[in-house]
Image 1 (spheres, rainbow, N blue to C red):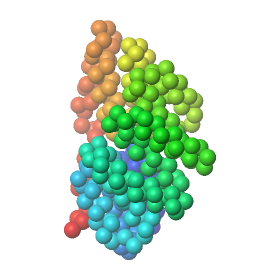
Image 2: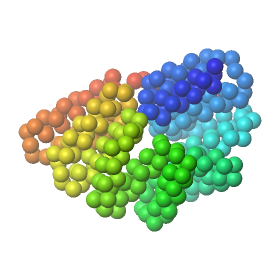
Image 3: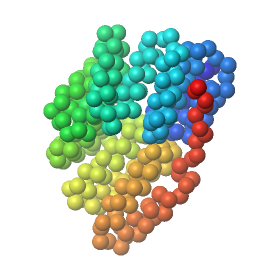
Image 4: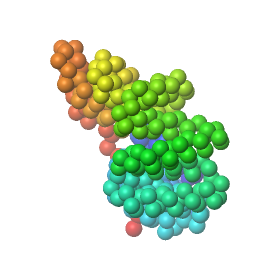
Length: 277
């Protein structure tokens, strides 16, 4: 039961529904389970904290999980998540952990996680403007996920490639990637992210009407599915972009977004993590 609850929490985390994820994780923590099951629950909880940008807490949870797990696959999954935690703060350490993890997944033929790690390494290189390296890693991740029909990974990589094109200011190619993705069946989190990226792209191209329309669509999805992290980004981007436009209707929409952004009910108060001492 503990594994099942943790898996369900992990699915909610993946979909961006953090309120349900925290509820499921707390239920799992109330059970009397073995060390290995507890390590698995801690891993899902740490990943939830990581997604909520509570990075220091996430790392502490991961360290505890590493101490008690006897499962090698889980150990490397934890190391992978730790690598994600350092993506934008310690490039060298993050790449070290993720490269070691990728080698483990490749050697053990765990290709879905291998492709996912390559994707994240590609994102690190985009962040640090190493676009040549980013293309190599994202291309490899795309080929692997396509070959093995890992559809969620494949769509995520396509979105990342679109983001790479934006960073390179190749807006036409980026637009083609995102529009093509919108024709596919995606989880709400990914669809909202693609719409956000299109809104950002059209703002950079000074297509302001399209900018607002894409942000509105993303906002509707984020609200409907309670994707709290995306909701903040939606309100922020909508307010940021519309407030710069000299249009009464756009400015009114910006004021609406600011009011929404400041409403505390959007961001539920999550309980503190369980003691890991």
